[in-house]
Figure 1 (cartoon, rainbow, N blue to C red):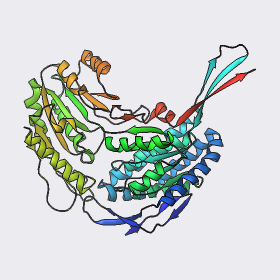
Figure 2: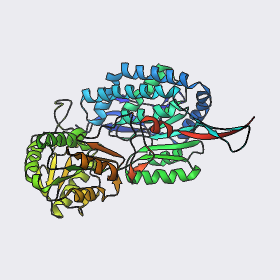
Figure 3: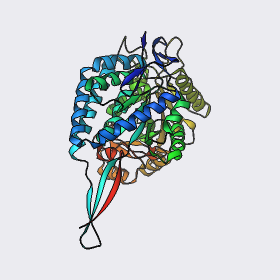
Figure 4: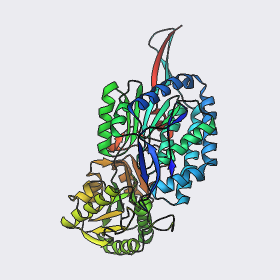
Length: 472
């Protein structure tokens, strides 16, 4: 059994209390991680603040060179990182290793911003005067990482933070912490300055100390709506900047001219990928009544054909949910939907035996007022709603608390443009499912978050401005 240590000020530290980490596919303990103390959280912030002063003073191109070296080491260690990720998440080794390699690619992308962090020259109202708007680092960034894509999301946060001149303190999910410590090993091998990256597992109480430390200038979270509200409370303490990617409830609208075979195959794949534990996974399907029966039959066959099980044994299977509570909550949501009138077309059974698995589940006869439509499922459950007109579908898609991603299947350009103008979501995908291109901008509307990730604007989230009024 592997025993990991927290990474503080460039050193790996052992704490008194060790927490077990379980493989969600087998429920077997395979590692232990330390639970950081309040003193260690404070020390990590202080170390980050000290390292950040020298890091921000480097030319941006030097920071970019360091990130490229970091990316190379992550790629070289991808199999080792992937092995830890596969055990903690239930992903296949191929998928977990691929996530590490993709993280290295993302790191290289952000390294290229070194020569592109731009300010502005603004005309002054006064003669012999120039206004210079500069982009500057914020300081110390607290990065709160989710369990579903713990390597990709970690890099998604620390890479833009570092290229902009910040230092970071990372709190990985307690469900998937071991891969983050493998990234810490890569940081050491890459020769990054001590204290620039700190990675600690901790309780919620210690996380509150971390996030309310006076030297934390920004908190970035990918997590639930409830977690986002907690982070906003943390930000109040020192008016820290929040960046929040929260819940999603991706609507998928399917018009009569769509290719139903292709749509059904893509829907089944998207909904069962990582057992539906994606913020942008399809969470509610609106299908035109004229094709409702035909599509439902194809979806039913597709869902029934997807077996679940340990992906280290058979990578074609649907893997587990992250925790026992997640498994229980998904099943409760299905039972509640049935109670409210939904019909189970496939799945809907809580499996026996070890592992936090749940059968891919298809629900028909769903309505907009059901909890299964209103609340994020974050599991392999797909509710289907029939509609009669395109305008009705648009209204149903927009009638929601969340606005992260959205999907439309049609070949009619007028419908596409109508939705692109009117859909209430930060992302709109046409004839494909979400994949978060990292040169874009991943930002939610409504209760799906504040700020965003990826691309130019995601990088600029990690900066603040200084206006220089220059008399000459």
